[in-house]
Image (cartoon, rainbow, N blue to C red):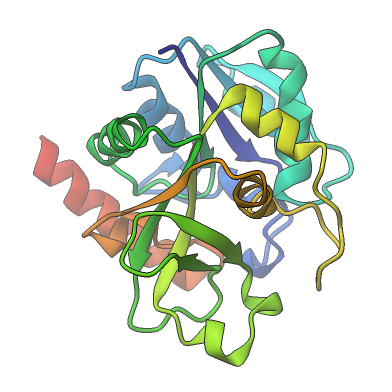
Length: 249
């Protein structure tokens, strides 16, 4: 089945203590977005769509060397809203859509291949990449059916109950969807949540409600989904990227 990739790169990243778009902060001398695009290219997709927003022209200029289509998210109203802006670039596309975050450069192409293979073998319409963390604070939690790969819903930290916050399996922000199901479900999500945003994760609840199969695929390497929201986390990511380079060189 044909594959398209959407990379979310619209955010400002206020905790980075800079007005620079978060995806343009550098790790080992290269913008974060470079690593993500190159990982996407390794999958040989039919199309890569880059969703830009904050200082959009700067991100477009910085990524001009790559063959990517551009979608503009203005204003930024959440992850679900970001993917809505990419729909026009994928008009008529009936394959699978892999969604990546432009500020998450540590995921391996091999892990993404495994994720896509699992998605297909499970005959799922939506699959989320997950990991288990000793301290899951700040991440969305993945609620599974008992003893099953199936997902009931993904709940954001700010909307999670005390019981849900005890769950250690977290949402990486990496997903694969069957394109028609994704864009149909996006038309049904609302901003009825703590952040008043369109959550992409609500697609999982909608799919469950429609009785279609949604799954989670857990990576054994939690380092791959480390978030970069602060200068301190960027330093950690630099070290992990160097380790990744040494491993595959």
